[in-house]
Length: 116
Image (cartoon, rainbow, N blue to C red; front, side):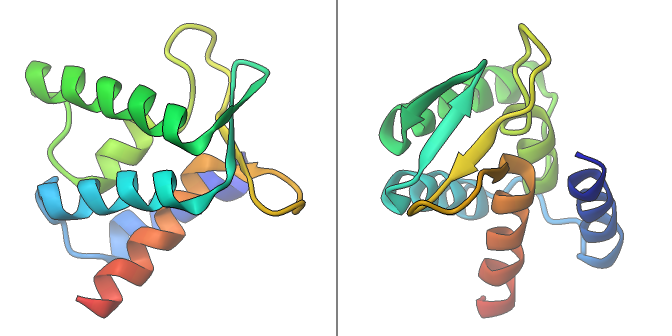
């Protein structure tokens, strides 16, 4: 978890602050859904499609409240941990060990921004 927090901090300092451009957030949500990976929320594994729906719902709520304005804030506030239990989310792909969802999504955000 410390590694993911350090990665989030490093990205927020090194990457220009982009508005929570629908393109970046939509890309992350689509990336999750297409990944074929499993998503752990509150100790239970869910398919990527279900994870996308859950996180997209959290994102919509946060947008409505004005609590997210960057893609990094989207990851930190909607896709890092459960708002109910506080348990961190994890992603597990193709038999690989689970990784924190924040790390997984921020690495993809970095790749996406580098390509655009």
